[in-house]
Image 1 (tube, rainbow, N blue to C red):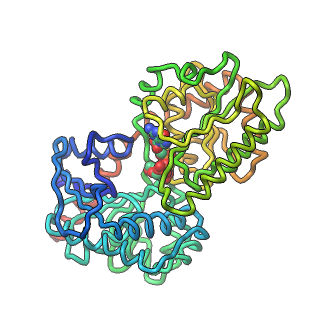
Image 2 (image 1 turned 90 degrees about the horizontal axis):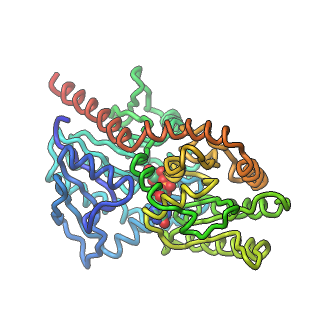
Image 3 (image 1 turned 45 degrees about the vertical axis):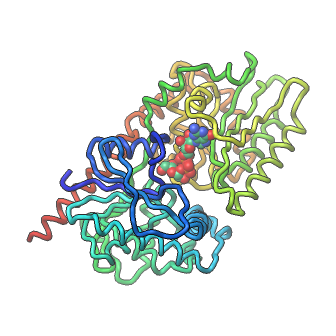
Length: 460
Ligand code: GDG
C-alpha cells in the first residue's frame, strides 16, 4: 500500500483488547499495515475539545475524541440512530426528526474533519465506516483534504422513495460523491445507489462504471462482509451446547441471535414459532426456540416498543404451549459471551434469521460456520437479509409471511441428512472463501488501485 492506512469508525477499541468480528478485522489489518485509527472514546466530556487523545495500539496508533452529552444525544442517539438507521431500514415512519439533531450530527463530523485535516497527507488512504460519518468526506474536502477517501456502508442503502423523507435528502448524493470509493454490502444496494444518481440531473455513469457528480468521479461497488469463519468453527467445537442448555435427548432446538432491534423481525419470528407449535402434531418432534436478544440503544423510544412486543408475544406463546416439564421459548435479554454463543449455534437444528431488512447479517454466516459438517443444522434466512445474495442454499423465507415461516420450520425439522449436508456444504464453502480477511483485502486493494490512479492523474 502506498501511503498510510487510516481507519475511522464510531467507536475505537481503546479501552481493552478488541472483540467482535469487524473490530478484530480492522485491528488485524492496521497491525499488518501500520497506520492510525480515529473514532470516539466512549467517554462523555463536559465541553467539546478540538484535540485527540493518543492511545497506543498493537503496531498502530489510535486517536480518540470525547463527545459531550449534547453531542451523544444529537449525533449518536438522534440523527444517526433515530433518523438514518430507520431511514436505511425502510422504516421512515420511525424517524424522529428533532430540530437541532442534524446540526449536532454535522457539527461532530465537521469537528472530526477539522482535527483530522491537521494529520492527513495527500497519499493517505482513509477507510471510513458507517452512517455516523456520511458527511465526513464532504467535511474533509471542505478542509482541503485531497487524500483518497473510502467509505463502507454496513447497513442497507436507502430506497430513493424513502430518501425523500429525509429533510437533508438533497445533500445525500453530495455526501456520497465526496468519497472516492463507496463500498456497499450487496448488488441490491449498488442498484439502489445507481437509481438515486439516475434520478439526478448532472449525474452520469462513465464507461468504466464509475459515477460522476458534483465535479467528482467516484466508484460504488459491493463488498459483502464476511466473518472469521475458521476461528468461529473452532470455538463452536470447544463445548457441548446441548449440555449448556440441559436439552433432553429427543428435544430439537431452534436458535435466534439478534440485537433487540426492530429491523431484525423478532416479533414475526416469535409469531411464526407460535404458529408452528399450534399446527404441530403429536408425533412431530418437540422443538424449543432459544432467542438471545441483547439490549441495544435503549434510550431510543422505538427500541422500547420492540422490547415490549417481544416480551408480550413470547409470554403469550409460552403461556399457551408450555407444559409442566417444558417451556418452548427461552428468551434471554442479555449479551452472552462469544465463546458460549458458538457452541449454542452448533447445538441448534435450525438457525432462524428473519430480519425485515438487514445490510448483511453476520449471524447467518456464524450459524453455518459453527455446524458439525457431518450432521449440520439448517439455516432459514429472510429474503431481505443482504446475506441472501451469497447464501441461496439456505431455506429462504418472507419474514412478513408467518404461515410460510411456520411451514419452513416443519420442513426443516424433518429434512433428511443428505439434503442438510448438501445445503450446508455449499453454504460453508462460501462462508470460508468469502471470509472477513477476503473482505478487507478486496476493499483495500480496490482503494489502493484508486489511490495510485488519482496520484498518476495528478502527475499528468
Ligand atoms: C451491522 C448491520 C451487518 C449478537 N448478540 C450477541 C452477540 N451478537 C453478535 C453476533 C454478530 C453480531 O453481534 C451481529 O451482527 P449482525 O451482522 O447480525 O447485525 P448488526 O449488529 O445489526 O450489524 C449488519 C453488520 O453490521 C456488519 O457489517 O452484517 O447488517 O446491521 O456477530 O454474533 N455476540 C455476543 N453475545 C451476544 O449476546 N458475544
